[in-house]
Structure formats: structure tokens, C-alpha cells
Length: 124
Ligand SMILES: [Zn+2]
Image (tube, rainbow, N blue to C red; front, side, top):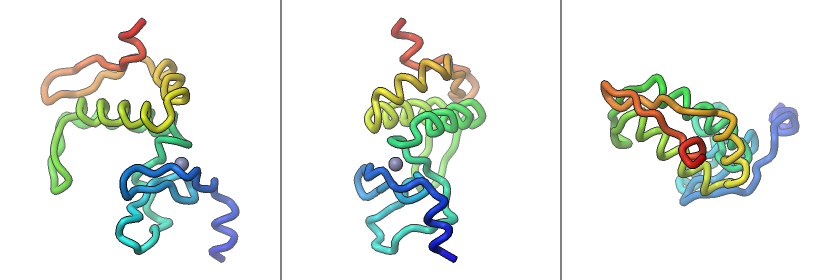
């Protein structure tokens, strides 16, 4: 059963950042725990091999979350976008530039304000 699952998924691209690694299915998982990955956990798209999907979902999140807070830290939609944009560019610059150009301006929420961002647009 697990064999069929593995075959139908894209394979890991080898990208890693800190303890986080790309897994089959093109999601990142925390390899530092030594527990392997949970195939059900599809929280973190790999910014290297799914750069476009990664940035699209970050845009959606940045435009719908005005602020967040929790054990992992806190911030605003603007923070979400800036972090994702930086990570996308670091992970796969050509794909990120292409994806950013296609996405257009991002109306990131910063508490009560809307901040237009996307360095690809601003640079033109
Ligand atoms: Zn990957």
C-alpha cells in the first residue's frame, strides 16, 4: 500500500534549510526530530521544487491573515509575505522571480493597513 503512494508522488528534490528537508510529495518536514515525516502533513510546500505554489499560497495567506501569534512567534500578513518571498528567492531564484512576476502586487495585511509588496514589481 505504501509503495503505491510513493510512486504517485513527486520525489524529494534534495532541498534543505536547517533541519528541514524536502520529502516525497514536495513538502518540507523537520528532519531534526529523527522521526521521519508524516505523509499526511502537507503544511509546508517546498520552496525549491514548488516555488510557484509556495509563493501563491504565501500570497493568499498574507492577504487574508492580518496578524497571528502563537508558540512559533507572531507577526502580520506582511511578515508572512516577506519571509516567504525571501525564502523563495533563496531556495530557487529563477523560479521565484518568474513566479513573482506572474503573481503581481501582493496586498499584504499589516494589522489594519494594506501594504502593497512584491519586490519584482517594485524593481521595474
Ligand atoms: Zn523540493
